[in-house]
Length: 134
Image (cartoon, rainbow, N blue to C red; front, side):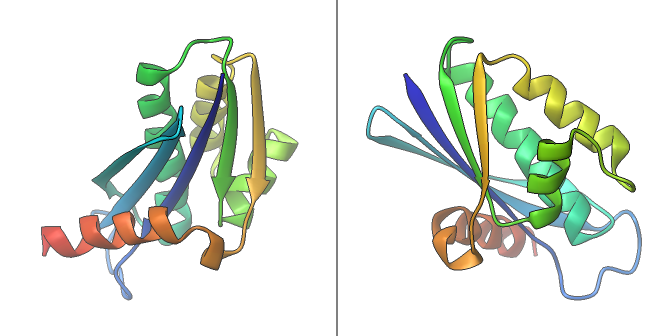
C-alpha cells in the first residue's frame, strides 16, 4: 500500500528564545482517507520546526502503516529534503538521525521537495496549531 505524508511547520515571526514553540501540520493520505493532525513542537527556529514536523509525521504514519508500505513523503523544506537525500546535515545532525531512523522502519520511503503552494493542507494545519496555542 502507498501512503502519502505531507508535513509543514509554522513558526512565530520573531522567535527570541530556544524555548519558543511552533505549529506542526501533518496530512496523511491512506486509502483515499485523510488524517489531518496538528500539534505544537518546541523549536528554536523554523528549520528545527520543519524537522520536528517531519519526525511527528513519521511517528504518526508508524501507527497507521505496515513496514512493507511505501511512504511518499512531501515537504516544502529544502533543508529537510536535502538532509534525507544526503543522509546528513551540518546543523541538525540529531534531528536528521532521528528522522532517518523512523524512515528505516519502512521498506521504501520516497522524499520529494514540493513548493509551498502545493503543501497547502499541511501548512494550514501548522498555522492552526500555532494560532490555537496563543
